[in-house]
Image 1: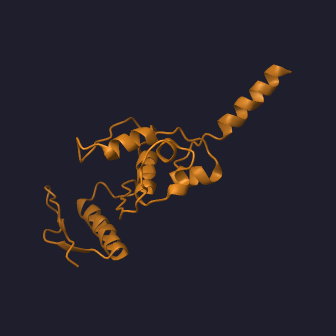
Image 2: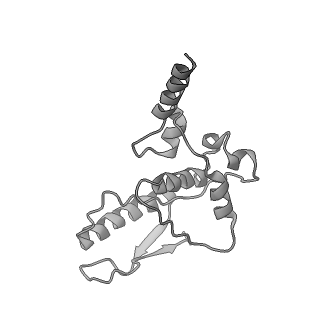
Image 3: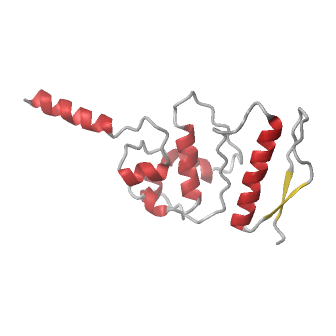
Length: 156
């Protein structure tokens, strides 16, 4: 009898593991299984040794979920982090920051001009959301060497 109960507990636990690509917010709302990586995220955002991080992991290793977790952190959604390391064991303030989140999953990667247009649209949408003026000095064209086309005017 004990074996059956343990087997059922294992099955119940496995059902809470998502095999789709949910957001951090959705996982928390549905009570899905989440391995707490906020200790490492906290160390990363508090570190003064680097301003940039390159996250290189194999497919399906949680890169998008980690970026989405960081997004929610910087958007100040403290309630989502209740019970997690960063809320319980650190002095993180959950201050709200403007977040530009670009999902590259649906970009037409074989058409550089379409990629540029899509990114331009996303940047323009973000500029209105955060009341920031973006100016385009070098719009992406058909060239093989895209440059950074945007500068941020924070004097508004």
